[in-house]
Each structure stands twice: as structure tokens, then as C-alpha cells.
Picture 1 (tube, rainbow, N blue to C red):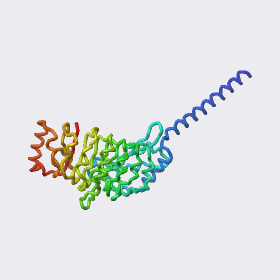
Picture 2 (tube, rainbow, N blue to C red; picture 1 turned 60 degrees about the vertical axis):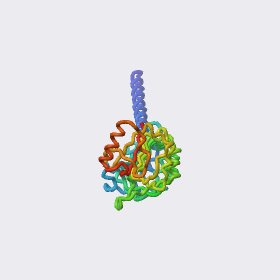
Picture 3 (tube, rainbow, N blue to C red; picture 1 turned 180 degrees about the horizontal axis):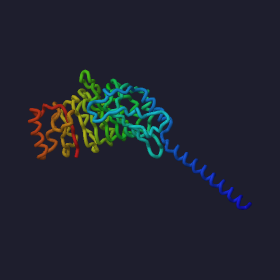
Picture 4 (spheres, rainbow, N blue to C red; picture 1 turned 30 degrees about the vertical axis):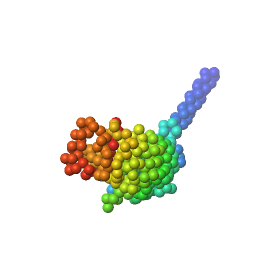
Length: 306
């Protein structure tokens, strides 16, 4: 009888251990569902606001695919294509929807702006139908990287972009109407000055194709010492590059749409040739003359600090 009781007790203990193990496994499994419910819902509603269209992604995309097709209700959004989550909190901190066939508009009430923890946002090479860059982007105060290039955004670049003080990379280039070839974004002198003065962590800034024809080049006088690359292709800048800007250690490089590299000055941007006196710069300037016919015949300027 004593042996029988011992065996029964052993069976009970083993059964209880199995239940506890199963419960623990279930708990651990559920803990991997990191994505907060409200952020998953915001992403699903964002998905519903677009129509997938392969023609919406620019031909410059080496690979394009409708990333949002992997976004399904009842699954962990941290596993979705293009979504990055914080490993500890589960908050959505990265959204890479570049080359994602997105066609539609992004209005100020978009659920995109319900993702306050974003650190990286890439919407490049889609078609947002002339959507204006909303002032709501200014609430992404944790952003370090923002890329809204080649996605048919239009209108004035809002001053709120200058509130993103942690940005190290900002690309607003080449938003254009494919039917007319005209550029759609513009930047006023005061907003350019705000960008230059407030975004003190910037390493890369690309404003190519942004209409800055009414902006004085002097707005660039207070360029950040941290800035490594500045691209200003086809932006209509005119005038003399400010003497206050330190040009002694710059390399002057340009980036063309065809992804080939050369060096040439903005058509009406004087004072750049004195930026460097080394043999490399002189050799490249010679190539400009041969390639473009004349030194001042180009239409772009990219400064690479080094």
C-alpha cells in the first residue's frame, strides 16, 4: 500500500510538471508577440490606404516587391517585411517601404503618424500622388534617417522637418511628375536656414530636384561641421557660395541620375573652384571641361566633406 501511494504521488508530480512546462512554453511563445496591438492596427490601416501597383516603384529599384502583402491580421508585426521592432519594448522603430509598389496618398491623418517611436523611415520610390509632406512628420522626434525621395511628394517642405534634431540622414530628392518631368517640392530660404541651423547631427543631406530658385545661397553659410555630403542637383540655386562656409577640406563631387560620378559646378554658383588646390581636384576639373564642354555648364553640386 505504501508503494502504491508513492507511485500515485510520483505520477501526480510528473503530471503537474508537464502542465507547468506546457504553461511556461505557452507563456514564452506569447511573449514573442512583441508588436503592441495599437501599432499593429496602425500598420494594417496604413496598408489599407494604398493600392499595390508595380508601376508605382521607380525603375531605379534593383528589386521591388509589395512588402505589405506579408502584413496579416493575427500575426506579429515585428515579423512583417519592412518592419523593425525594438527587441525589448516591441515598439516599431523602423519602417522601410522603399520600392514597395505603394500608390495612394499620405494625409495628415494617416495612421503612419501613430508610430511615435520610429527611428528610421524610408518611403522612397513609390507613388504618393502629389501628397504634401505633412507637418506631422515633425512629431517623429526619434528619427535618425528619413528618406522621402522619388515618391511624388509635392508642395513646400514644412518647417517642422527642422524639428527632427536627431536626423543624421535626410533625403527629399527627385520628387517629380513623371508625365511632365517637373519637380514638385520647393524649399523657402527661411526653412532652409532652419534645416541648416537646427539639424546639427546631419551627416547626409540630399535636396536634389527641390526648387530653391527663390532661396539665397547665403542660407548655406552655417553648414554643420558634422555634414559629410550635401547634394543640390537641379535645384535652381543662384549666387556665390558663402565665404563663411569652410571649404578648405571639401571634395566637390556630383551625383547624376545615371549613377555615374563626375565633378562640376552649379550653373550660376560661383566661388566653388577655390574649394581645393590639390592635384586631384585640378584633374577632375579638367575632366569637367572635356565632359560638359565648359566648367559652368553643369546643373548640380554635391559637396563631400572629408
